[in-house]
Length: 96
Image (cartoon, rainbow, N blue to C red):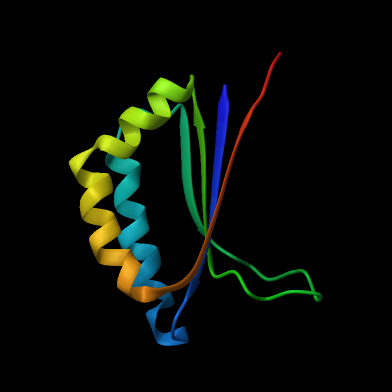
C-alpha cells in the first residue's frame, strides 16, 4: 500500500476555503482506498504553515498514478495551483 500525503498553504488566508473546496473535488476519484481532505486544526504551537492536508491510501503505485491521470485531478490542479503558496508531498510504502 502507498500512503500519499500532501500539505498546502494558501497564498492568502482568504483563499484557504477556496483551496479546500477545490481539493475536495479529488474525493470523486475512485482510485484511492482512502482519501481525506481536511483543514489543519493547528494544534501544534511550533508551526502554523499548513492550511489544508490531503491524505490518501492507494493499493499500489499504479493506483496512485491512475489517480493523478484523472481529468478531475488535472482540473483540481488548475483551480488550486494559483491559490497555493506551498505544496509539500510525500509518498511511502506500507508493508504488512
